[in-house]
Amino acid sequence: MTNEKEGDYCTICGGGVRPDAIKIKTVLVDGKETGINQLEFIVAGVRDLHLENDAAIRDELLKWASEFNYIPTKKKAAYGDALMQEYKGTQE
Image (cartoon, rainbow, N blue to C red; front, side, top):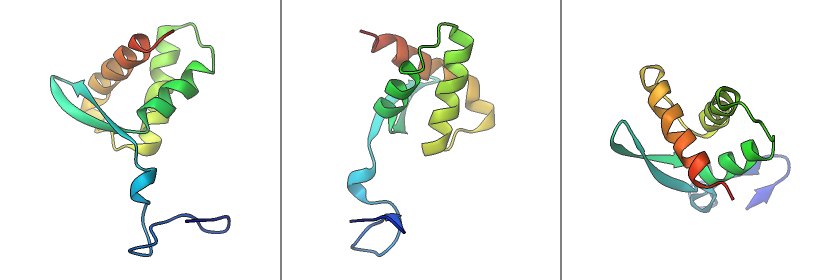
């Protein structure tokens, strides 16, 4: 259910994110399968920025991903690698 004043919430438990609003895709981070919520949205959004520099793309991917996912500081580089691989693998 969407309420403009309150946003999306679960109508079963009365709070939290609606289960259908979670869109997790699994990628390899340091060789381990790791779920990234909203990955397709993140990649598409960064692609729409038309950045040409890999460092800028990587920074933007990490910034967007951290909005939907917890990224441990010690694993930031590994997440960046995984996100870049996904970004480059989905280019048209």
